[in-house]
Image (cartoon, one colour):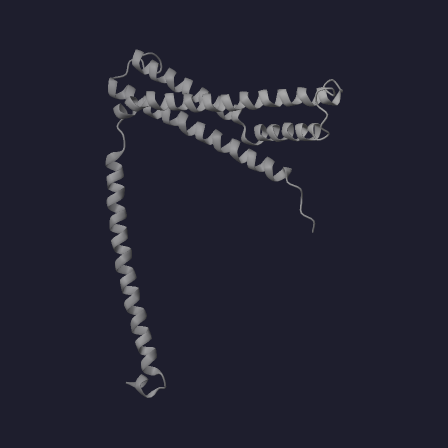
Length: 202
């Protein structure tokens, strides 16, 4: 009743009540989202692959890793061939061997710039290293898969369920290690890119 005699007291009381009402709505919405999130977590837990399902998917994962490794290897080879061709061309132009055929003054600077550009691409994106990591992981996973099927060490003397479980653990560890090495290469590329940028003048 006191707010009724205070200027704008009714409006302040109304604003407080609206705020409380909005807070209650937000709490209800948050509780609803938390329930949905819990249901989703339970669904994901039920959808996790069993060791046998993991073993069935492993050959396709190995094939995918090898496909990516081949793509990185092709990129590296193609860029290397381009660098060699450009380097030979620039050297020939610099030595005057092709003056009778090519008399454009900008060919040497452009060729040198392209060599630097493609060399920087290899330095920053590291396709050779990424391809080698993927190929190594794929080969090691393939050896683990074959060892599990042949019941040789470290799978000798284990039951089928135990072999599949061990296979899942070891291949997941390999996959995790490959992801870590991939992240390290990307971080190294970002660090080299930042260090290559000229420092801004104060």
